[in-house]
Length: 299
Ligand code: 13P
Ligand code: SF4
Image (cartoon, rainbow, N blue to C red):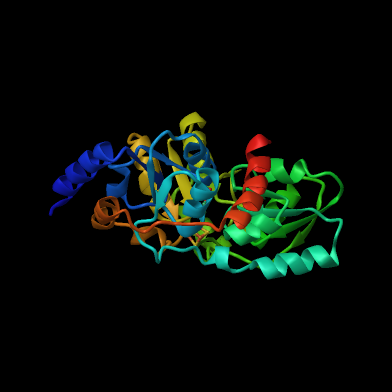
């Protein structure tokens, strides 16, 4: 089947089954075509919490799909490729968070949404890259344990007056970007604004005109008077921005997230047809993880 036929078939099945397709900004461009909503982790978790559909097909990675299930347990939540995980989300396990809490019983734990449901269940409050500064700032007291992303945690600390106790996780897509890569891109495009994701290192963020989640990048490109941007994150984000603002120029600096690109139109169709792969979260874990997500969504 060619792309046009696949898209038609997906759209008709979606109606028939009262399904909604949520798509992360890093997905392949053809996946945008079947989306009911495209956004960053925060936007997508809000959509998952409020949808009236019976089925959510989530084109993203496992932690995002688990988050949707935690927020909408009565719905069938599907991940079209069961192998689409996030390496950073597997860098801190619930046992390690428990041990940290035993060692520092009075220090609140903030977890990045890029975590397993079990880690969310052990944490006090969750955050995404869009609201990490706000969430960390809202924590009473000076000390904050932050898991798993050392770069996002350090950035959130730099924007607040908190003492961050950081885990050592990172995203290979962002952590591998070097300051020299930005300097080279700036030389080639001297008028472009540099917009970087907070999962990048401190050296890279120092060179940015603006630090934004993927959703924040769309807002920034819209509101900024500039017509050119160096986009420092997963490479697919430049295509996502170009789709939104065809008259502007976007120069990507970054790598590909292999897991995000595992989702294809064929797999989405199979997912809808066979209702695979169902993501489940054990109820006692879900209830506790939900609390940390609700605390985030309330802020
Ligand atoms: P956003 O929430 O900014 O979309 O980021 C998700 C992510 O995994 C970045 O690597
Ligand atoms: Fe995880 Fe990095 Fe991929 Fe985001 S870009 S999903 S943090 S591996």
